[in-house]
Image (cartoon, rainbow, N blue to C red; front, side, top):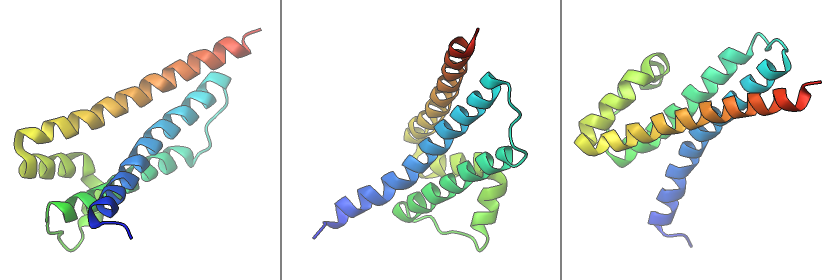
Length: 130
């Protein structure tokens, strides 16, 4: 039987993995379309943004349970509209200066996904150049 600590670690890592996947997959798909000169599907920007937002909401739900942050009645809608303000606010409120490391890690992951997209775009253009 799994210990509660192991189960809690898995419960926290799955939403974090979803955030990383949403960032990297979105960047890779955008880069492939741009490198090949194909138009992106009309629904793609909404789908990629929505997947990132939902993964952040899932992560924040686990985070708020761990740090005993009470959710207001419509917290999911609030996060959907303004997660980029709400999540850092609560992280800094609960963790203080240590929260900057968590925010910096997200920014670093975002930058890594962007850089991977740029590298993929260049690689595909080189491979498809005639």
